[in-house]
Image 1 (cartoon, one colour):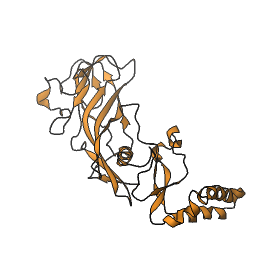
Image 2 (image 1 turned 60 degrees about the vertical axis):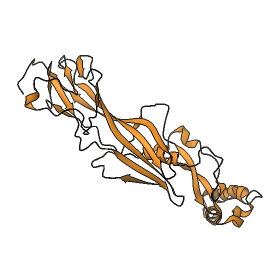
Image 3 (image 1 turned 30 degrees about the horizontal axis):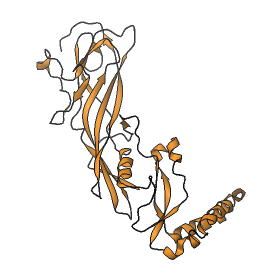
Image 4 (image 1 turned 30 degrees about the vertical axis):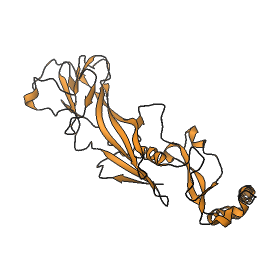
Length: 288
């Protein structure tokens, strides 16, 4: 399987989005076409040359018991060019998860143009879900004013650099099949968690939505000193006794997909966040 990042995502972090729907995950494994009869026979016969503790001949013997029987009649050689053997593939991002062991069938034959009777056979949706794991979203780096140490009862303005947070997409394709799917992530909202109950959020929900121009939050300027920030927080108690507050900023990304077969739709919203330690001082007011 091949993946391609579309466009220029700029400075990005290669991490996984976390689905908000905790009951959903991208696939841990699937089956895809891999070997012609000649290729499979050559690979299995190659095991016989592995001498370590007799493991090679043992593996070769086990496979020959499958592919030299009446079921396949010498690896289906009479069907060379008319189909392929499908094999299990594990998603490298999820190889340590129990679900990665779900694709435990040996290679099986599928005629050219036929649809396997197997729920985990690769499809455009599986390609789209695999691409979900490959989306290179940026770090959720927020800008704050005041920068650095905050002050009790003084509004902290929070915003994102709109040039950095743009839609990003990944296309996953399976060479030789014509199957491909493109999964697109679009940033939609920033959620702020101040790290303490002694704080007021702006807006009160803590969720700052993206504006039509792609911005989220408003950069602070001196003419705004008497305004309430559209996105921000006001700390009500100093941290001299408690230590810094872990302010968490989590960006939500809406996910959609399209494919070479015309299929498409939505996938679960993903999130990606970062935490900033915020120190709050006792001073009640300052001039910016």
